[in-house]
Image 1: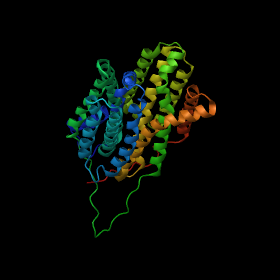
Image 2: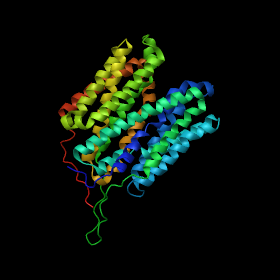
Image 3: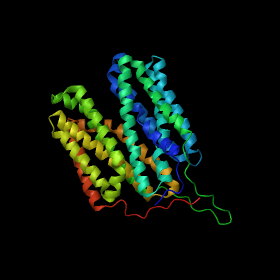
Image 4: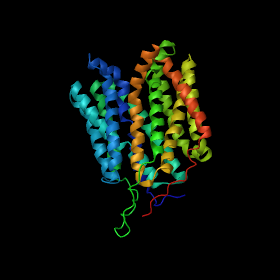
Amino acid sequence: MKEKNKVSPISTASILSLFLVSMGVTIVTPAMATLAAHFEGKDVSWISTLPTLFVVIATFIAGGVMGKKVKYRTLAIVASLLYLAGGCAPAFFDNYTGTLVCRAILGFGLGLMAPLGNALIIGLYNGQKQASMLGYGTLFMNAGGIIMQLLGGGLAEIGWNYTFYGHAFSLIGLIMAFFLPEPETAPAASKDVGVKPKEKVSGAVWGIAILFFLFNMLNYPVMMNMSVLFAERDAGGAAAAATALSMYTVAGCVAGFLFGKIFQIAQRWCLTLGYALCGVGALLVYTGSQAAVMTAGLMMLGFGFSIIMPTFFAWIGICTPPATVAAATSILMALMNLGGFASSFWLKILKGVIGENMYSAIIVEIVIFFVTAVAFIFYNPFKAKPQKKSEA
């Protein structure tokens, strides 16, 4: 299958730039110790986690308006401006509350932007080209995450406030937003013919979104606790943990680059493969006592996740009507971010029930990932008839 209209190179680059800046929240991650020292007595974890709440809210809003009431291009420009303003503003004043307000604005902008890239890819491309573009989107997302974490860490060495200047990287997204293409929409129904019933988001979309929610809720604690695991096992401390976590992202880049070919070969087995890799990766993190073993585990987790994520979006592309793709993509992105936020509550539950929430969280993750991998051996998500693109 071919895409209906030829998408120009500049338009393709503009779509991928949405992914490049999608992990801007992580800029502050390597600077948390610096921020904690500056805002002494304040809970600086909110600087990292508060944006995710507003990402969820804005993502649902974006799903209801993009491509319908607001053009993709317009929404991307507004999102980029909010992202840039909320991200950089804390560098210009020294106030904890004000910083949280700015982080909320940043999260809202990111939420408006979050579903755009995948929705555009699903709306503009079909078949193998769509799979390849979804993989490249994951590649650019991970690459952007690496760049912005390096920016955040390097700027934090200069001063706590310089960390926030790293969000100026989003200028790339703002400039490229002016070149975003618009997917074709179906023509309005004629009054003589009558109005067709409004298409609804497929129930399968909510099932996919719940899977994504669970994945993030279970996997996020592993990422948060890596420095503690390295310290407890005398595996190299914070520096080694940071290197291992960066390899998670590097492995995700590789998986994103290869996803088009992986999907072409494995298609219905992609989710089994992705979850199995993540299960093995989590098992290595749990059992490994050396930095090399735990790093290998994180790399498998990163590679597996970057197979699962674009496969979910490809699944959405065939299981819900074209008119609902924007809303479906927003639901998926919203629940993905909500899973990361919910992980804190998941850890509290484990602590209250078991009395320990680091190793037990990994055990639960291992079990659920392997069970899910087995389930997708018997369930083929791509057996449904692909939804046809609306004709202009």
